[in-house]
Image 1 (cartoon, rainbow, N blue to C red):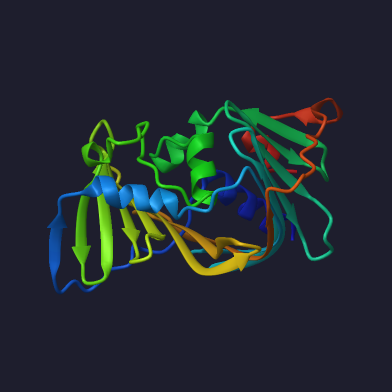
Image 2: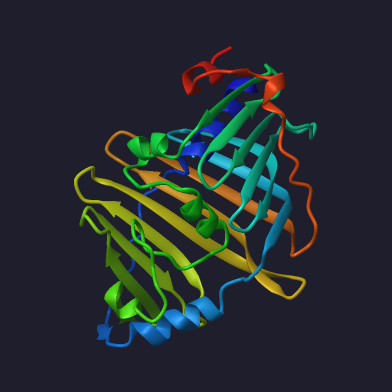
Length: 271
């Protein structure tokens, strides 16, 4: 059980998962000129909140031919902190991931060990410039461009807008031209899929949202899937959300690291 939890924990940190990008059948594609208006409608229809508490969440990991299930929760205060708690069937916290704007901490509560690191470490695995902002945007279902700061009223400078049947696609590339960023949006201006393709590495990361539910006036995905495929690895990480509250006071008390031994990531994942 411990090994399974550590595998899931590692994949959570890398924000990666399996499966190949879905291939859609396109019958008629047209280029639309005004990405500015379209992006403003996406932003208007995003779930807007300052605090998020996902108190019931099933986590499933598929890695090659194996799969594991775990339970967890996520607490977030916008632009400040995100805390993931990972739990087995018995419901007590085994691992905790505390994400802050400039660094993160990971705690193994059973073995009293922790890691403190910046986000650059994970970019070597994903080829994507991982940051607190990107991770926050994923769980806020927020429009963003990879590797660049998006400014209001300049969306035409970032995106090419196309329509295929009833699906809209916003396409952009990173500032260095290495990453193709494609966002699939439905007719209600809701983001459904985000594909990040690395040209040189031959890998693709995908974020998918589905089964939107009404959580007391806020429409939020009940399913968030992170997928990753490369020449060597394929994995899929799915969050099934059954209970979430927004804009309510939440406990964000951090763990005191003085009670734990500081180690490297490699040391954290071994006994």
